[in-house]
Image (cartoon, rainbow, N blue to C red; front, side, top):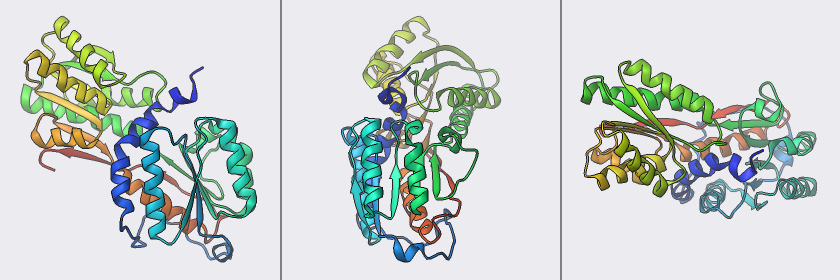
Length: 333
């Protein structure tokens, strides 16, 4: 069985992309009240629940999650809210205990949880529901044992099928435009245990086949991080010198690929990325990366917090199922 750190490795990776953006959003941001993620209601809960949010991420040790907590505090503060940040340090028991304590105290009027172990939080969810405290959790309802929207709970997840399809489609477009539809492709995959891995990678391959049916995936490698990715992709080039297109499922894979080709003194005609951190986007602008399927974490932070605020008006009504926005970034966009 994989550890909580392993299971949430993709979560940490994608949060790292958004930490800087979230911190920028925290400075001087204001809500225009037009978020599509709105829950209407006219109950009396809004007048009784305090404007205090408890934010419980996996841990504050990773810089990405520390940055996210600061972004949440800044944005919530700009809306007149206070934020209690908890640090379970990847311990599911501590996360549950700390959340239960603050929920029982009556100090908070909403909760935002990135759970270490969703299956351990059943009683905490029930406690929030019974107290009329709206709660937002990361993942799909079925990951929490539900079949759809639930009273007082909003779910927020990354659509890996859509992201994978877009990644493969963009690589296919590059192959069609630059290589006449024919290419030898290296598929730089994420490590086992990452969230959404199977559905994401299946969708990416399907998207590539639909957009460039004559392209051939000649090798697949797992990329753990940028340095090892550069080394492994460099080794792959020695065995498969005809590789001229790479589909990177993470920023680390895309940046490692660029490093490998530079070290080999070769040009890489087609490279696509999923994630969209600042360094990757700079390479998109320069033309080194054809396209990035970029997760829009600033927009997601706003829609998540704004939804919790609106849920206070009727905290026993069904919450929403939110999706982290994605945007295809190219040199021309």
